[in-house]
Amino acid sequence: MPRPGQVKSSGERLSDRIALGVLTRVFPPELVDEVIAECGRGEQRSRLLPARVVVYFVLAMCLFSQQGYEEVARLLTQGLERVRRWEKPWQVPTTAAIGRARRRLGPQPLKGLFARVCHPVAVRETVGAWYRGWRLVAVDGTVFDVPDTNDNSAFFGRPGSGRGQQRSAYPQVRLAALVECGTHAVFAAATGPLSVHEQQLIPDLLGRLESGMLVLADRGITGFELWRAAADTGADLLWRVRKNVVLPVVEELGDGSYLSEIVASHDRQRRCDPVAVRVIEYTLDGGEETVYRLITTLCDPDQAPAVELAALYHQRWEIENTLDEIKTHQGGNQLILRSRYPDGVEQEVYGFLLVHHALRATMHHTARQADLDPDRISFTRTLNAARRHVTSQAALSPLPTPTGTH
Image 1 (cartoon, helix red, strand yellow):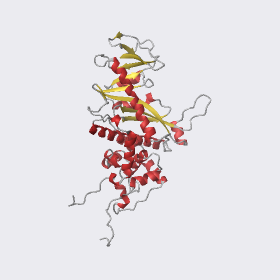
Image 2 (spheres, rainbow, N blue to C red):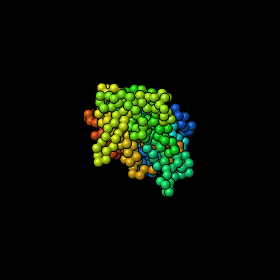
Image 3 (tube, rainbow, N blue to C red):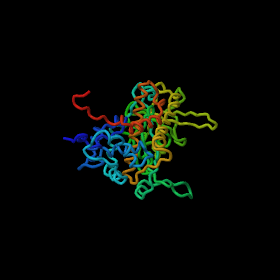
Image 4 (cartoon, rainbow, N blue to C red):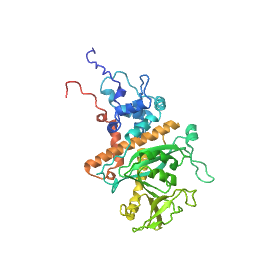
């Protein structure tokens, strides 16, 4: 029995109540624990930083990207120490302790959580997410600067700065991603060293494509084998191609487009299993005239008129906006990831993607309630609100209601 004035211990650890505010709805503790168990990263003994807390810490450090490790830990636990008396005392872990905990966790739980949570979120009523019956998605890639350590430099490599100039100051990790255009939700991702081209990473994304999607891609992505593999998923494609790709006219169509064939680059005689495509060519007037050449699996002009597809292609820029949200708004100007070793870099990249997906899912929910296009909701305001929610006592996961009270 506690002495007069003494608060009885709750029997809980403070770390059991660490949460991510509104983002906890997307990453509930039960799901995080399940993914950790699947990845074999559960604890063998009680720690100041159990695996679930480390997952939440990684997500929090990608939400509060400009804050140091120890400050992120303070933000996660702010106010909790005053809620009740905990079974074990809590102190903010040192930067070194947090770093060791991240290494124990590894990237797999973050990747597993991404696979479980990150899916297209648009519904049929979502404004701007559809073209006729197709869900609009886009594929592209980007790079992130990472700390200049021997491990990162050896694994990821760094870009050259041009002939006769020194190489870039930072190594870089490459990311390829699939994004739902109408909501900016990233639902497939793959990372690799800088020497691995986007075209080599994209095959790892194709398992997330399905019938009823229309995939948009820029000319840097297009390749014969990749096109065929993407089309084999059942998704339809609308990709821009380079001007030097040979596209013979097989049949002219009434809307100005024409049917053609594409072949592998080594098949100059066009004898080895050509693939039928429809070609749409158009120009945009803006001082200097640029010719756009698109190829698509949608070969029926009545099903998808050329003028509509030409206008639709520029929805591809939604993935550029998405990557900018992650790297510039969420990460801050001139973002350099903080992880000093390759597994940590991969873990951190997936942390950024998970936080962005949670924010975008929240924005989509808000837009649906207000019957708005999700583009009308400010990403920056949502980001700031999520940050405030983490540090507010009301954002913490609810404590159990005592028996017999309401």
